[in-house]
Amino acid sequence: MDSRSYAYLSVKLARNGKLPVHINDVATDTDLVSSLGKIVGDEQPQTDTSCEALIKTKKELLSAKSVYHYVLESQNEPDYRQLLQTSLDKGLKAFTTKAYPKTDSEWQQVWENADFANLAYLLSSNSTTVGCVVGKCTKEESAPDRQPAGEAQRTVEMSLLICDLDPPATRDKAPFDEDYFTGLIARTAQLADMTADDLKAPTNDGTAAAAVPTIMLAGFVAMLTAVAA
Image 1 (cartoon, rainbow, N blue to C red):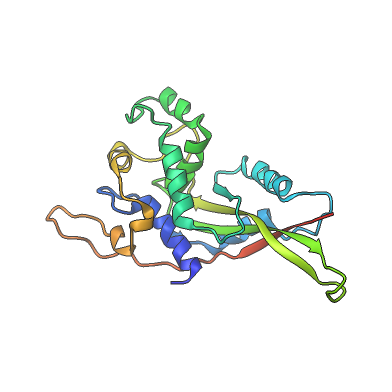
Image 2 (image 1 turned 180 degrees about the vertical axis):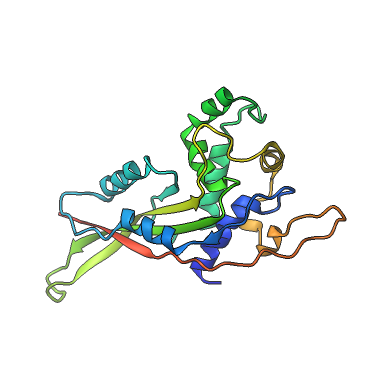
């Protein structure tokens, strides 16, 4: 399985893997991918801007949008299962009593938690389509004298994963029902240990429903470039 397929499978497992109650499956939407690509964009090299500053600017743009995002401060390729697991663990901590909110005011309070708000956009039960992109911020350093003119060393310093699910969750409202929440809060299985078979929905007679078809990632890698002074 290539990294793109693995990334989208990870999103699907975060939503429905090894859960007794499932929410909507999501299919790839290339329009969503294109829209996110415009946010990430191809930056012109900047000598006075760090990767931290570039990523911060992108996050500020995302704050006004109903999308899931995760910043990876590493030169390694994103481990989608791990970063989604981290988002799940952080977001579900907002439910300090592990009880499902019953009123609008309770949901408003939960939404004040930034980690939950981010997770809610990933787990919205009404979403049917998804598009994801990964922006990689690279740092270019001037080539040593021994290297041909114009060549530079480029290393990835930070990555930004963005996923847009449509329809999105509505802020201050329940993104999923209590039955789904009960299974989600009780789930102990880690995404890293799951496979596509774990997307099979349980049925009343104890047999599994047909496996959810695997969808291919229609995203791309957009580069955010910062140049060392």
